[in-house]
Amino acid sequence: MSSSPNPRAVVLISGGGSNLQAFIDQVEAGELPLDITLVISNVADVGGLERAQKASIATDVIEHTTYADRTTFDHALAERIETEKPDLIILAGFMRILTAEFVHKYSGRLINIHPSLLPKYPGTRTHKRAIEADEEWHGASVHYVVPEVDAGPVIVQGRLRIGDTQCSQELQHRVLKIEHQIYPLAAKWFAENRLSLSNGQVLLDGEESPEQLQTYNV
Image 1 (cartoon, one colour):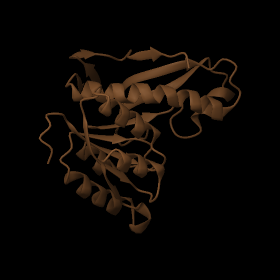
Image 2 (cartoon, helix red, strand yellow):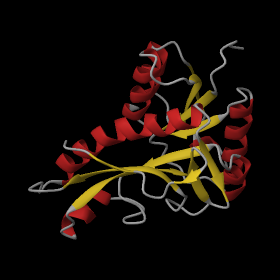
Image 3 (cartoon, one colour):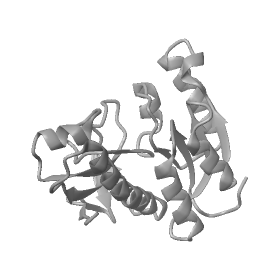
C-alpha cells in the first residue's frame, strides 16, 4: 500500500478514458494531490485501460455481461473497490446505471460528470438536444452521484456559448475540453478537503456554492 498522504481514488470507465487521462496528466504534473490506485472497466480492451497501464496504474476488468443482474454486478464491483480502501470513486465515462445500494454505500465520495448544464438534459444525446432547443449555453456538470440518474448535487459546472455550432459531434468535442478542466478541479477540491456535503447541499470551504459556474471560450 502506498505511504503517500494523498487521498486514494478508484476510477471506473467503459471506454477511451479521455477524462481519465486528464486526471493522470494533472497528477503527474503535481497539480492534483490524488493517488489513483486502480482503474476498473466493465468492458474489456478499451483505450482507458491502456492509458492507465501506460501510467503504471493497476487495472481490472469486471464485465457486467457475465453477471446475472445489476445487483450481482454491483456487489462484485464494490468488493473489488473495497480492496483499495479508496477515499473517492470517480465515474469517468462509466456507462452503467448503479443500484441504489451501491450509491448509498459510497455516498459523499462517488462523483460523476455529465455533458450538460444540469438540471437541463439529463440522460443521453445532450448535445443534439441542446442544439435542437436553440440553447445559448451548453456545457458539463460534475456532481455527486445519487440513485436517480444525473440528479445529484452539482459541484461545479463549465459552460460555453453554442454559437454557430450546428453539429452535435463538434459540440461534444468542445464540451469535452471543458470536462477535462472541471472534473480534475472538483477532484482537487475533494483531495484538499475543501469539498463536503451537508443535507444534500454542496459546500466549498464550508460555504454553500450553488453558483460554481465557469465560462470557457473553447
